Length: 147
Image 1 (cartoon, helix red, strand yellow):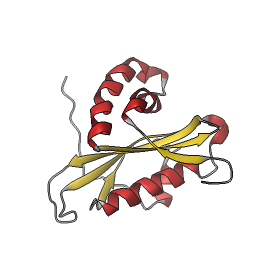
Image 2 (cartoon, rainbow, N blue to C red):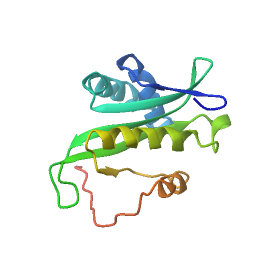
Image 3 (cartoon, helix red, strand yellow):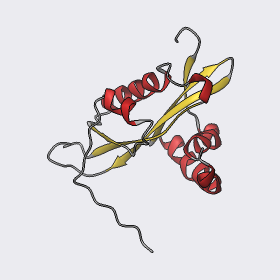
Image 4 (cartoon, rainbow, N blue to C red):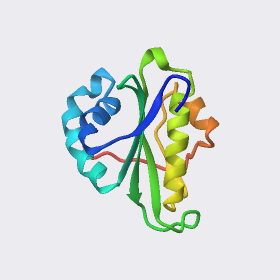
């Protein structure tokens, strides 16, 4: 609990809200229903961990981590990877440390489960937040999308 908001975990019934946070851009709204369908069983199985910031029963922010079975690597022998997703704060509540608090709590929970490596895709606005939490650029990866 902070001065004006409380924290609660995301539940399977929150799948549509989680999806809305992940599909907040107009160009992403078309995939919101599919995302909700995808995330619900992961919430049920504990493979998606999410937290919401709430004021008077209204969700004002959220963050999530998808637990990936990545396979053991030199730097991450457990093989578990945490993919940070759906970090979103409603406009009037931005720059108040809410996303930082949610994400920090989520990473601590994941670390207690043995997760030692996290990755994410950062927007320009989000980069300072992630850098302040210890994320660094990782240029060694490449990506291919099927046509």
